[in-house]
Length: 160
Image (cartoon, rainbow, N blue to C red; front, side, top):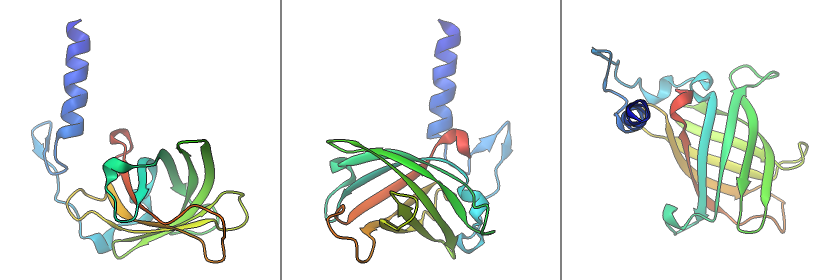
């Protein structure tokens, strides 16, 4: 039981400790400027929420996960997959994009061919790029798709 309690306490501390905290008695380096963020900083597993424009994140109508890796065809870009749940079904899609001067851009394709949505957002200046907020919009010319939503992407602690 003590081992479980220590494990839970350690996990809680890892999640609640600020990015500039100390690790093993050594202070971490401060977050680099947003303009210095590289695509490799995005690699890993992200959790996300989608909610209506003008609403609040607590009103999320879809939640999911996104795995980003190096894009095999375009150095300096990322590619991956997302899976999210809505009130009625599960959605899977392919994604690809980049980060430039602290701005995040991602294209989503639900069929692997045509673009279905565009994600644009900004990296957090205080959380060392582990938090991205922005807007997910239906791709131009896409009719009958999802409405425009706000999003928040949070990198999972194990993906730092």
